[in-house]
Amino acid sequence: MDSNKKFLNGTLNTILLALFKEHGKMYGYEICQLTKEKTDNTILLTEGAIYPALHRLEKDGLLLSSKEKTNGRTRKYYSLNSSSMQEIDSQINLLSQFTGHLRVLLNQKA
Amino acid sequence: MDSNKKFLNGTLNTILLALFKEHGKMYGYEICQLTKEKTDNTILLTEGAIYPALHRLEKDGLLLSSKEKTNGRTRKYYSLNSSSMQEIDSQINLLSQFTGHLRVLLNQKA
DNA sequence: CAAACATACATAAGCCTTCTAGGTATGATA
DNA sequence: TATCATACCTAGAAGGCTTATGTATGTTTG
Image 1 (cartoon, chains in turn green, yellow, brown, orange):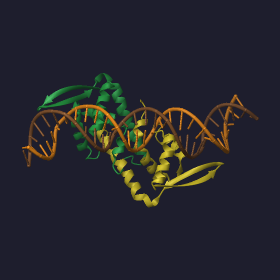
Image 2 (cartoon, chains in turn blue, orange, brown, green):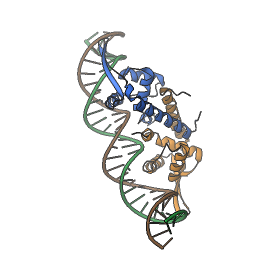
Image 3 (cartoon, helix red, strand yellow):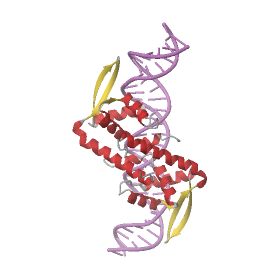
Image 4 (cartoon, chains in turn green, blue, yellow, purple):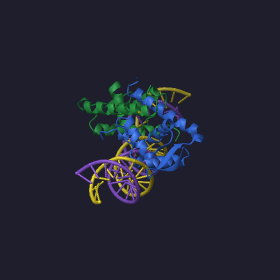
């Protein structure tokens, strides 16, 4: 109620795509940690949201995955599917536009 | 799928509060039109979303309403309930913060 | 002058996304 | 050896928006 969790709704897929675009390959757990750090603990991606989202994006052909074993633990790395780059950029641009307009509505053009 | 409609999810209530803060009293239909104009037809608030949202905000004590007859048509005007101003500002600030962090994740700090 | 369009409100069913809560497994730390 | 951190996963419930529909009045157009 008094958190900003609900704002995330609808933006998660695109946030993930943008993170992959900047950071290359990443795995789920890492994304949760990184996002938390980058946003001063305000955007907290839950695993219950992130793993299904990654599966969805892979199924939709926007992500590719590969498993790697590191320190005895298996990580599932994802990265952008370059053959869907147009679609990926399009989605990121849409969200950028949206946040821009949103800031106009919120009167924080700066 | 290829629109930015889904991004709206979770932000509608707060957008409304911000609009009221800037524009004073407004009625539902007007808000739909104004938002459309202010965002170059990209943020399209549907009536099916906006009317329930206005009812909710009034029920929660954040908005006050009054009916007025203009040109034979009845308008239901809403405005901020000044006694809830603290809560209202808090919600707007939360969304502002969120969009700020979102832009960091999207790499569009400017 | 009738049809179409714009204004203005409202609600219900369904969809989609996320959250909560739970589960499994390994390595490190206390 | 118990707890915590890492690392994955899924199911059920909750919540918010879209789509579709309904009502009613005023204005424009053919």
